[in-house]
Length: 237
Ligand code: DC
View 1: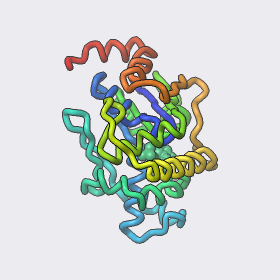
View 2: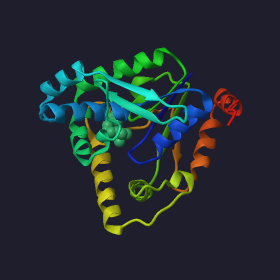
View 3: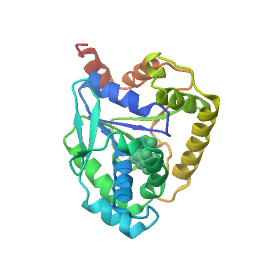
């Protein structure tokens, strides 16, 4: 079975997809981490993220892989090196927009993602999973939330809290505003680019998580497929 979760930054896709993978025994595929890894590889090699040909060469020659621990946490390996933290820096965040808008990079990434899908039982999250990567996915979700709700979640995460598990911390108003501005910038870029813009697949179920708890979002997705629900029921934890 293939589950596709798309949506903008900060909509909660990653936490939700990781948890469903754990409960339902699916392989979790974080496609954003793949684009981030290419962006990091470019920065490490001194390649300008706007230099389309040079960036495409980097995408073709790097090796990106994942290791998943028993608790569902994932390590991202770039040419064998753990880059899980390095791909989340503001420098990578800036470089990843032009890298992910590069059609040649997308070709390479989509092939890798489909190769993972061939193994079956995958939950993949990103921007184009239901529209391009796995258009025949068994379950397609477009998960969104208001920009304000998404900025708040990111701000709490950066302070070490996690609204997904009801764990909140005080956040600085200025940094929340900065995160909001960055989210809006990335949304605009991702939705208006020519290649695979962020948009819901016609047959995707849209879920707005602004007012929903983490468990409510998980429940809404599990309810979309009897197979998925049954797998979660069988989860021992
Ligand atoms: O989900 P994320 O924030 O880790 O994604 C990082 C960047 O990669 C973001 O700018 C959107 C882009 N992306 C994409 O274009 N297609 C995907 N399938 C996943 C991410």
